[in-house]
Amino acid sequence: MFRLPAALAEPRNPLKAISFGWLLACPISLGLSALVNWLLPSAGQPSFDARGSLLLFLLVVFSPFVETLIMAGVIEVLLRLVRPPIAIVLSALGWGIAHSLEAPAWGLVIWWPFLIFSTLYVTWRQRSAWTAIGIVFCVHALQNLGPALWILFNQA
Image (tube, helix red, strand yellow):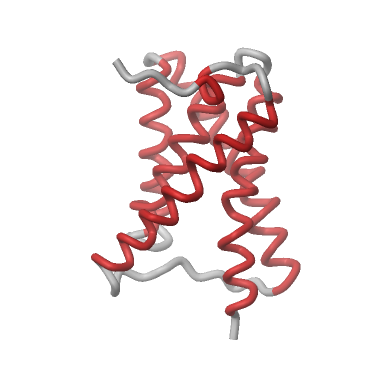
């Protein structure tokens, strides 16, 4: 049976959970992104019409907050129907599909960080739903920060 690292499985240290969550989510999703771009170069990327500080706000604050709230609600419903590992996987797959609606290949990359986000939510909800939302929001915001800065500085 697969065993999660303590930083993901035990709601003890918020800073450790945020740091470890980001370290698990970001590099792997960047690697998945590179792999998808290499295998499917014409698959298309998501487009963002916003610029400057609005782009940063939308990608680093607004989207992570709203998506975390939606994810929390969906996971709470799933946990009434299935065991936590299944709820976590279904959540991640659902977010992959949802992001694929914007750009098909995007979902191939997004499912991984949402697997981490969903795991953190299920772990930290043992303390409280709002604590779990805060932890996941922080990891999600950090996850989006690098790509948001890259988009910002590469806008023509």
